[in-house]
Image (cartoon, rainbow, N blue to C red; front, side, top):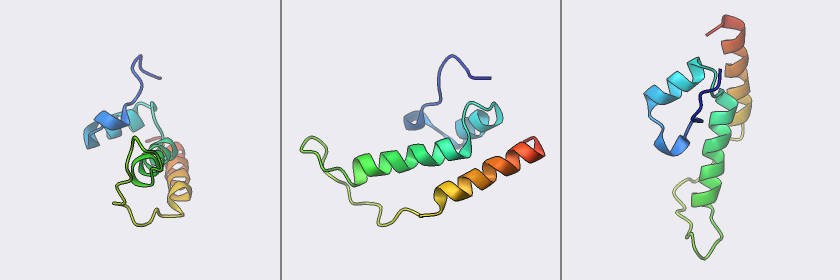
Length: 79
């Protein structure tokens, strides 16, 4: 079940990610997509107010596919 306070990527720890996954507040695809969006926002920024960091050279093109596979495994194994 979803908690009253949604998962906050900006405040995430490994422990909070694991808890959110276990409590079904988050799935792997959502987590990966959130990180990709942050990378695009800060690393590839094209805004005068947010200069690009250029810290990430490449995003794994199969990251979302791998996340979906993990979600399927978690669903099938009940974990």
